[in-house]
Every structure is written in structure tokens, then in C-alpha cells.
Image 1 (spheres, protein in one colour):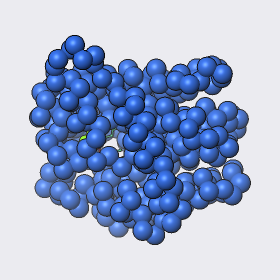
Image 2 (cartoon, helix red, strand yellow; image 1 turned 90 degrees about the horizontal axis):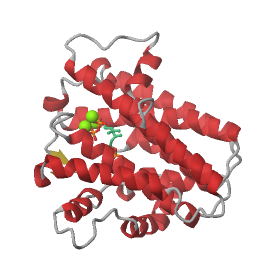
Image 3 (tube, protein in one colour; image 1 turned 90 degrees about the vertical axis):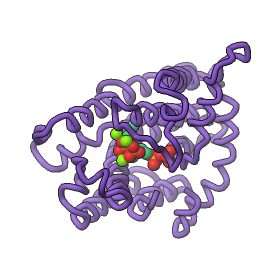
Image 4 (tube, protein in one colour; image 1 turned 45 degrees about the vertical axis):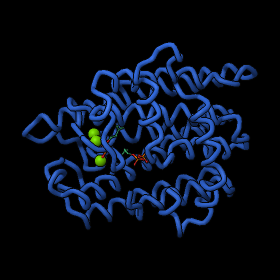
Length: 302
Ligand code: IPE
Ligand code: IPE
Ligand code: MG
Ligand code: MG
Ligand code: MG
């Protein structure tokens, strides 16, 4: 993410300061099998996690906590949980039975390299570990850890990421249109459920562990949903550019409505997301970084 943030001074500075802590924490909490289990499991875990991910979502978790004055050290384990869930979602997403992707981040995808069976186990390993991580170091505030745990259940489950990925499967399988909802906005939000759900988790998990009040969590939910829609739209624009031959057939807004319409929609989503921040949170470094994250989506190339 550093290379893409030249114009985003506060965010770049924040990422530079905190990414090393995130990388260390990820290493510390790796869901490794014990040494006596001499399979390729641990190699696959490392391969999946250290392959150039931007770490955007754990950064969002730290920022969510900082909005409420918490110290980042107290939510590093939760930030790892978020990255683990994201990693597992990408492993599943690339499988032959899903997007059938042979590459991820410019490298051979996990299942191409380690086989499908082991990849499924590793993905479940990341997910499983995430559910436990929200309790790490939270002995003094068990009720907040329990709330964070339920946030994962909600965001990963059928009403979130899993439901969202099932929509993608249905769309890929159907030759006809996925049933259109009332408006383009609703329709797109439902199609982007997988990405929005993980954005919600990323932004709110830190806030929950920082003891944020419900009203502010509601505002963050609205912010994250818009950020998720914007993120998926910018991802689809990148896919459209990078590999029109492969993704030309994907039923994305960018593909169906064209690049100009997609850019206009992206601007609109970003502006709405930023307005939620200015209307609900006092000025702070964390707020500036979240605003810059929203802006970054319009320009990101990877
Ligand atoms: C990819 O996300 C999946 C989508 C939501 C489109 P990222 O681009 O943030 O993944 P990293 O940076 O490779 O982890
Ligand atoms: C994947 O979406 C998002 C999740 C797994 C939550 P995509 O299928 O669009 O992501 P990429 O393009 O493979 O990264
Ligand atoms: Mg997919
Ligand atoms: Mg995919
Ligand atoms: Mg994509």
C-alpha cells in the first residue's frame, strides 16, 4: 500500500509506523501445526499470509480503535484476526469450485501450489484461529471480547461474507441476470455483500474492543458498507483494466455500465462515506487516515 499513497500523507505515515507491528503480530499468532506434524501445512500457512497483501483491513482495525482513544497494542490481536479472515476468504475465493484462479497477488495461488485439500484446511485454520484471537489479552474486558467475537460471527456468516460469496456463485452460474433489486444502489450493495461484510468487521472490531458506544458503531457500519461498495467497485475497475479478456464476462457494475459510470459511482460512494466520518467523529489523526483511505480507493492500482 505504501507505493500507492504518495498523495495521502497522514495515511502513508500511519501505515509506515504501524505495518511493522502488524507484520510482527501476524508472525506471533500464526496458526501453525505443532512441529511433530510434519506436513506442508505450515509452509502453506506462511505462503498464504506473506505474499504481498496490503494489510489494509488490519490498518482499519487499528484506526477504528484509535477513533475511541484506545492504544493500538490492545487491538493488534484483533487486527490479526481480521487479516486471517481476509486471507481465508481469498483462499476459498480462488478455489477451482469458486473463481478458479491460478494466481493471487501475481504468484501461483495456494491450491495450485499446495493442492486443494490442504488449502481448504489452511483456510479453515486461519478462520478458526481468528475466533480465538479476539480473546487474546482481553481478560480485563471479557464483555468486549465477547461482543467482538459476535461481530465475527455476524460478518463471516450467511448474512455477511458467506452469503455474499453465494451470490457470486449464483451469478456466475446463471446465464440470466441475478434478480434485480429495487434500485441500482440496493442491487449493487447486495452484490458487494462479501466485501462490505469484511470492511464492517475490519473497521468495527477495533472500535468494539475500544468500547465504542452503539450509536458510533452504527455510524461505522454505514461508513464501512459504503467503503466496501467503493472497494469492490475499485477492484472491479482494476480487474477490468488488467485482464479484460478474463474478466470481460464478469457481471460487475464496472463491466456492465462502463468505466465512466463506474468512476462517477465510486466518487459518490467515497463522498458519502467521508460525510459520515465528519458528521459523527471529531477531528483526529485516525479520522484523517480513514478519510484518506476512502480517497485512496479512487486512485489505487492494486
Ligand atoms: C482483494 O482485496 C479482495 C477484494 C475485496 C476485492 P485486497 O486487494 O485488499 O487484498 P490484498 O491487499 O491482496 O490482501
Ligand atoms: C473476493 O472478491 C472477495 C472476498 C473473498 C470476500 P473477488 O473475487 O472480486 O476478489 P479478487 O478479484 O479475486 O481479489
Ligand atoms: Mg470472487
Ligand atoms: Mg476472485
Ligand atoms: Mg476482483
